[in-house]
View 1 (cartoon, rainbow, N blue to C red):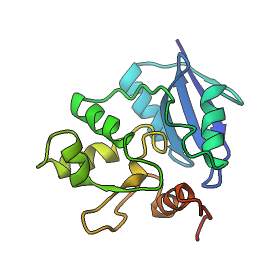
View 2: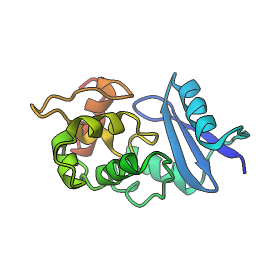
View 3: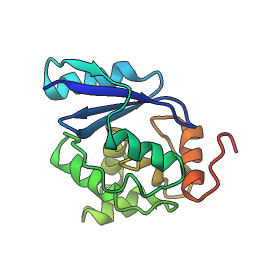
Length: 170
């Protein structure tokens, strides 16, 4: 079964959205497409890719999120791959409510691994489906934003957007 790919124009730049069998399995920020392909090939082996203008409900819900319905992506089915630990972290990230943040330590507690803040951070950094699996909602213990695969400006924008104030650069 081929992977279906569509590019979605958003206020934070183009996103490459990848599905397999109608299930979301990847989102990549502009300029990171090569890393998505490498991740997908590692996960699925040799892959066929079909480019589409839209991926139906998946891209419609992501577009609705950017249009202001920050809960539109909550129930999107995802297929992340990853280790058991990574999957537990990514599931926990989906429980962080829009407009709020949690620390890596908070996420470690959510998965009953209180002393695993650093491995949680590593798993968060390997999230294949940013935004839908909201790793942008995770901050350092001192409240600073820390890193983000899409860049700190995008992380700031996403957090601001979820609080009803999304303006890029603002």
